[in-house]
Image (tube, rainbow, N blue to C red):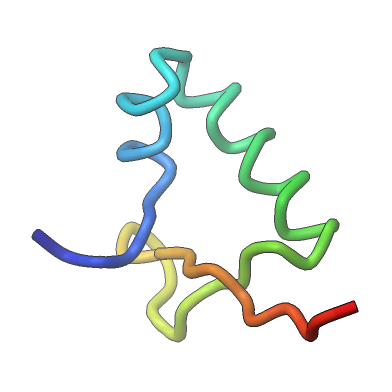
Length: 54
């Protein structure tokens, strides 16, 4: 299994529509919790960002 997250994978995990999954992912991107991988288009994936200890 590929370690990257896709909007389709998130939709299946969260049991939500693809549109809702993309909104969720965009929110996590804005919060700095996820970042896009280098692939784009249909291959767009996301991964967790490293957070510095507070």
